[in-house]
Picture 1 (cartoon, rainbow, N blue to C red):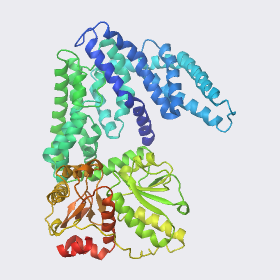
Picture 2 (picture 1 turned 180 degrees about the vertical axis):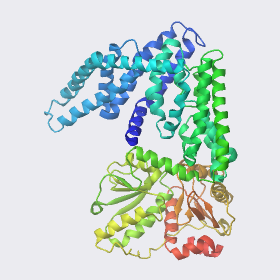
Picture 3 (picture 1 turned 180 degrees about the horizontal axis):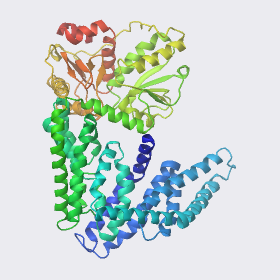
Picture 4 (picture 1 turned 120 degrees about the vertical axis):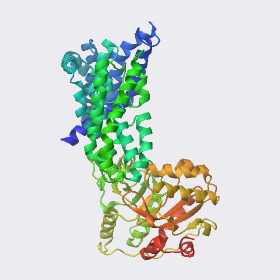
Length: 621
């Protein structure tokens, strides 16, 4: 049931979010040019009603139809919603558009499926055009006589319910449902699917609405993040909070604070009470916004405030919400143990995957092992972890003699002939979109993972070998690495443990000091780690810059940093941090050499904790 609600909420959000710019444009025109606006203008104010009553519903209906029925579904949705708009002229038909758009897309998709293979030659264009026109007309008529009046009645009931809550001082209690629902990723569905249509109707009549403020207020989440920044006992969590505050408060991405709530579920009390206090204040002062604040940034929140003292009242409500949330969250954070943000982030990713009906091990197309001809290892940039993983797995299956191509690429550029895509769990959505024809194998690291072992066993069974005994690949001659790629000055052993970012910056600084890169590459390495971890498994991490940082590389090179006690990369510790910089595609040769060197597990254990500079130089050089 929860999954169905989450998927429904995500679909509502997918209809509205691409059109938020239009909502904001309407909000600005309203705030600026109506008679009580900041810059009253009689002519420009006439844009308000047509945009609200026609443009916005048509855009939403077009998007909803396109999501289901493609371009034809979008056109059908736009036609169909006109019946609803004209059939209910007294109310903005945003909710009606959320019904008619998907319905129209479904109708035309069903028609197209029925006609597939039965289309008379030479009549394709005639049938395609007339089908949209006739079916769109029928839906517009249904919208005029049925859906429009029905939605008008529903809006009357909902508005009356909101009025009862406001008049009896009960509206603040809505926060009891809003804040937990946000953490379950229903925030956009609540805001754009329920509150925005009601608020838009109220704003048309009164020039503002408090309903725009219920979910979008950044104050409650800000209080939680401030508490973790000030009082968290976990260093990674504490250090991550300032960045999360900027993203949440200025960027308006509320999802950034959800993992912090999931770490200590009881902390949900803080944003609930904070939002209750803010809504109470807004209700008492009659504060409202003239349009939707999306994303929920303080910038968007204030920009949609009413003229005069409206901006001040809006800001005070945000401060109240943040202060109350902070005061309640702080003792909870203090009393809690040093829970891991990475675990909470993984829980969040799992919840989002579950909401889409996905699993964490293998998804995508059903491709049998006997049909596998090409395996693609994919990472965010296609340069680091995927290249190393592909090399290791290619060596692993070499003696099976199946002739399978194993290579790597970025997750957004998987070739169409790929049968299997191997990627980290966090990238599975992008991989599925990039390669819908391929089977997805998702994992936590590229060097050692049960999902890779299972894939190997399937391939070994096809080859006729024993799946329980892994074939040892023949020693492959190492590719010659150019002189100077690794030098003794680029090897540091016996280092004391530090946090992840410090270790990555140290590797980047050493690359810079040795003349491989310029200083900008260091920040690119940190940025790359924020996108997807460069931890490979088995105690090895290979931090490197983003693909956009290629121009900062002067020459190819690596540095090796040995941390016997390990550096925390989330749930695992890295003892060997190998910083990499490659000109063009030379990083692939470097990674292949490194991967080959790590085949010997006994040697790897020595490299991680005991090996001296000479041993490391001999191994990788």
